[in-house]
Picture 1 (tube, rainbow, N blue to C red):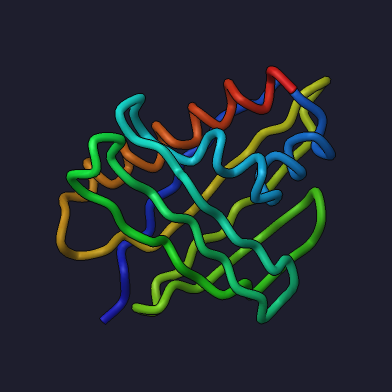
Picture 2 (cartoon, rainbow, N blue to C red):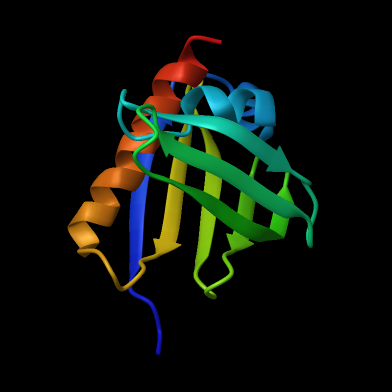
Length: 138
């Protein structure tokens, strides 16, 4: 069974170098990797190489729910493209394109089958929008 693919995007008011660093460094990931103010990302690990592991812990601040987003990197092209595969076989690929003085970040991900597609799109887009605000402030 193939997964339905969903694409989200945002233009970041930061250079590709700054954007890449904010996207891939655990100290930055924990500052932006959540979809709503009542959530946080208390821990992240990144072994930034093909075959390397990615882990981001996402939790409700009240402790009522949390989960780990785990994956293995397939592609790592600094400041250009990064892709990973999750344990259930779903993939996500993000590209970084210099546009004017900023960076266009686009992610295409395989949707999971438990939640509605639009809910997933909205959640991933909210995280990307949070990232955009964070990276622009660096």
